[in-house]
Length: 310
Image (cartoon, rainbow, N blue to C red; front, side, top):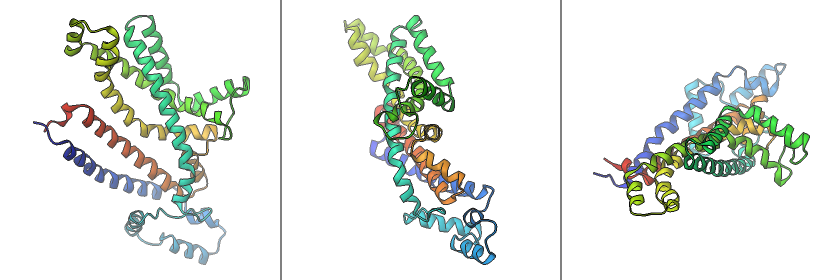
């Protein structure tokens, strides 16, 4: 018996609401556990006591933690994510100025990762246990093993400082995105390539594929039409799940390449102890993680009928 698809989708969305509340609560508590006083960060330790108390009252820091939490939830429900302590601008406005650069970097990185993963995965599966397979899997193993904070500077030294082909950092030229995208997409491409290989080989052993081969279907149709449909389901699900991880990696990559996105904004806010801005950036990244997980669940429901069983 199979449950209706709209009811299953609605159920998954409702299940994400407690997770969303947990994310909001965790972000609030973690920021209040960080050492340091935002009043000291804004006014300095030499400020007058009256000024300190006035600012503490304006920021609701003189209230109990539960009252601060309820005030924070109320603000979120009304679209108020707070005001930056440094320039007194709304947090959402500051994030809105940077989210476009991060979205551009994430999209290019995901596209690059998808192309590399499919090429390496197909090459490894088509020539399983041969030289091409070992080469493709060796490349993917290197991609998984090398961290972003090391790969980025190495690419910068090679292609920017030594060869002079690409800009060192920033977002001033169209080619500025190449090195950050390669750095961010390499690990994802390597992981997806190994998954693509295993899923494709498993699909080739499916009874339907064996039947198609026995009926005289061409190898091209078997590889690119029949088996690809079976292999792509888990790959797409994991790909959607990793979309959130790309934003997590963007914090390091944007810092290395001085890319003016959300990740760099988060690091700058931490360095300046701009707690409302840090809270807003971390919350947005966590929400994108949550949406990526929800998208992965919905893709699994849409592409794999076996998961719709009641």
